[in-house]
Length: 515
Image (cartoon, rainbow, N blue to C red; front, side):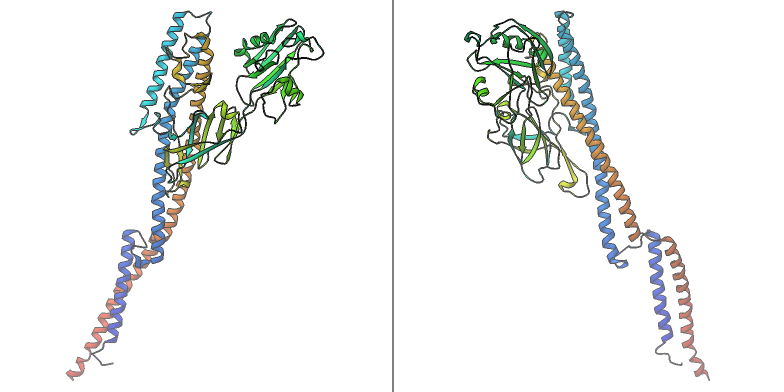
């Protein structure tokens, strides 16, 4: 060909040189950045997927940091509670020592009281000073805020976890289904077939064994002992047996009612005639029947009582927001869930009356919320209430109708060591405080081990898998890119040479003019 206006060969060579140059630039960019996708044009679909994976990875990596920080917070709180437990154990020992009045002087009890005062003050100080990065942990600032709690129905409400989930409050409805009951035995005071003068008295002499949750004792009574004396004898051993007695109604001849002091299925009462089965008889309420105000004789006649030497108590059962809560005495426990977990100590009036009106209160905020997932929603969050461990908030024990706390054991308190007749109450309060702190430590430990620990490990595994997936989509394969770079370099060089030859071919036309 001898045309010069259209050098097709040059155009072809120039086009291939441009392609080789573009390919060479692409290989150099990928090798320099280590990424296969550097801009949308490289792989539009791959860019979208890899960006989404990258966003998810970033969220999960922050979730791991959140989990580790939450674990550090829980560990800090648990460490402070460990010190509180040690102080409570020392208080328990001092109270028990003070109860041995025959071996301790008044001066020693005063010294014990000073130690108790110091330990209780230390517990409150730990509650107020325990913090993490300026966040107070045990002063109640991380507990849930409640409103509308009627003490006539609920003497104490402890919320373990509550998920408000964007709501301003959670309404809690408590409806008692089955009442809490004492273990109860009835001794009738009226008899048939004997002298009228025997009514209100034991028919003959006997030895009476009374057994309760705290122990067993034996009482001896002579013939025609008034039932009021039987009542007094049983009540004198209340601390040793855990049982109390009262006359049935206002008429002393109606009979005696023997109750366990506390409510619940762990309570029991047993009364045995050891040497004279005819001295008195005992009855218990038939299962499922309500307690009535009629006399013992009328209940026997109405077939609501059955002959028995023993009885056990009954736990309360209640619906909490439609969910059946487990009962322990007058305490209703709603197991932890993603929505709500709590423990309610009902008043005796509420716990023993299934016909009582539904009690309602509200959770209006508070609690400690930990974000444990890469997406902000309730399924990837955990809530927990961290209550105050101040001395006026732990050890709550219902004593003679009043809820009393650990600070009541300090000097001048209702249950201080100088009040020897109340040392049993002091011991019960300390035991309740120890149980509370131990239980809460266990809850924190379970959260740290079973929730936070497993969450961090599972998310780390997810991050590894997602990173691998993103790498497959976006990262450059250096072996492949190096081979393609070599190819592009060769093509670029050959295209340059070919272009030079194509241009030289057009110049051959000059030779025709020279001839």
